[in-house]
Image 1: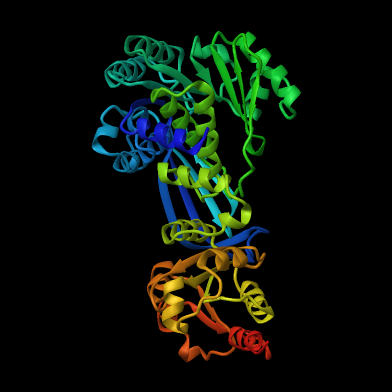
Image 2 (image 1 turned 45 degrees about the vertical axis):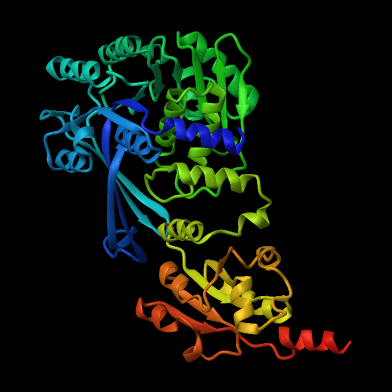
Length: 485
């Protein structure tokens, strides 16, 4: 799908009403550092630093629909407990309207303990008993009400008891009455439970679980999908395969494999929810099934670069698609807003962010040495360069020798540089204020006291360093020498 088609589809997705049915849970993350082993047992001691909590499972599907511009409605279940109250508080009034409270079961909570971007432990509190009786009847009645006007019904089955045969029957009835697509994200062993759904979306492990067949290579996936279509009366099955993309089997057609350049995976939690949300919204907006798969693949490739159970926006999808069609060097060159979004991702991963700036009119060995040294002091290095107008004000007419585009491309070609951005002001102080780097670096012809922004960085607990100066290299000297020739 080209960028213009994607933009049009994202616009059509805006405001689309989508019903999400399924298990609602809380995803809680407890972050901290580990520096010692307990004296009581050979286990790490996590020094608590912060916590975050968000809606998970069907709730996370709804969050992603909202982030992409759609209008989610949610039918699910919480317990009559503190976690249930917390979950409902995380919902808008409209989203919580059709959520049922069951005092006989706990709200599902997944608590993850994380240090340096790595999960140490996950603790689950849950009931997986199928709902029944009055609670089941109430959920079915809420589906009928909430589905009015919905363009798609998304069933998020995490196996926590909400998705029963009676609930699926209510979803099928609602889908027919509203001419809505019925899409199921399945973790069940028995795919026949979902009846004649328009699409079932397991991941590769879940497909193997349901069919008893391996699901690693393309040929194995094709065989497993063929078997899955024998086990289920659904119209199509889409299997998500992490870095290997997605594979789609439509009844009566050959399997199609969809690929993207594998992303820098940081956290896969909730990626299936994001894919389901994007898939359902795209179909509701009138996309072909193939285009909807492309959109789902794009959305999930973005969310796995984020920490925790995250969401994706339409702007992020457009930016990622544009970046995919640029050379790797060009993709390092970003606007201020793009820079801030990337910094947000890095901070979620606990990375140390470095910042330096300059004209970099004619790149020489001194520049390369100091940038390489700066990168050794941080996890990611941002280089901010003066715009052409800013250089002229600082250096006079005749400068810069190289345009902003040329200077940015040369810097982006260096392995030690992670992102390049530009500023039009005389100094980068406002950009530093917004970026809030952990480390501010300048070349060795400066002292720490004269580095622009040093007071800001020190003020929020950051560090200011001066890289080693290499004698005999300067842009001014190179230009003077060229002039003498």
